Amino acid sequence: MTPEPPNAAPDEPAPADAVAARDRVVVGGVAFDALTEGQTVEHIVAEASAGRGGWVITANLDHARRARVDAEYRRMLDEADLVVADGTPLIWASRVQGTPLPERVAGSSMVEPLARRAADTGLSIYLLGATPGTAQAAGDLLVSRYPGLTIAGVNCPPMGFDQDPAAMDALRQELVEKRPDLVYVALGSPKQERLIGALRAALPGAWWLGIGISLSFLTGEVQRAPLWLQRIGLEWLHRLVQEPRRLAKRYLVHGLPFACRLAVGAAWGRVSGRGR
Image 1 (cartoon, helix red, strand yellow):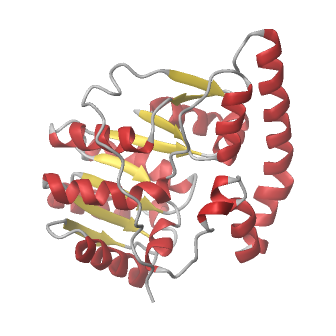
Image 2 (image 1 turned 30 degrees about the vertical axis):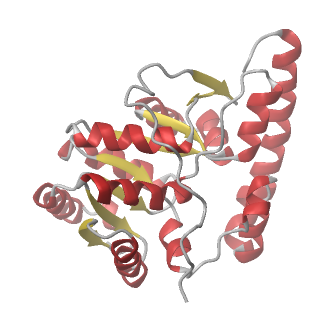
């Protein structure tokens, strides 16, 4: 049984120039755009409607940690047109250091608002990744919830496709033929960012968004943490309970120690008068 759409009223549209005058806040060594979810969605829609493409990365604690040890990933963050904070610890740290980000902007939370605005404005979406059944079901669900939405294509390539030049050429050609306005890439990080980096030049007018496991959340195949857990910063614990073998190292070995260092660095930045 698929989950019902949220009952909360959508964010008010942000001014079209919201990003033109935006601030950037450095947290944990990553420069984040100080935008709300509504502003992020409206900027993407406005730019895509004008034929100007881009790339948004919803960076969480693990992304920030990886950027410190992985030069390639740091470069991808630098290349992205928008980097927003998808992690409550990042929001807390920004407040502690005295340079508050407005709110958490999660890729999973943007999937539906962006689809709703795409339907309103005639933009099309291409779903890339996940599993064949999940991606198709997610596309059908989005179309049923947002009449008028166009799903330009659904592509669930096999494992290892990104290492196969012929498979990559075929995917690139399909994207050029379909010409979607928005591309949701559901492959997990950093694979989805690497793929976007390799493909976006072929479709410069599109906006690219890495959404990880979001299509499985949408269809109900995987249950997302309740809102109260998300708000207190424990969504990671909910995910860990669901997939302990896959996520234990990320959250317990890497995530918690980095979160502690982030908190100490934010506090020191506040005391010393320097946001970090």
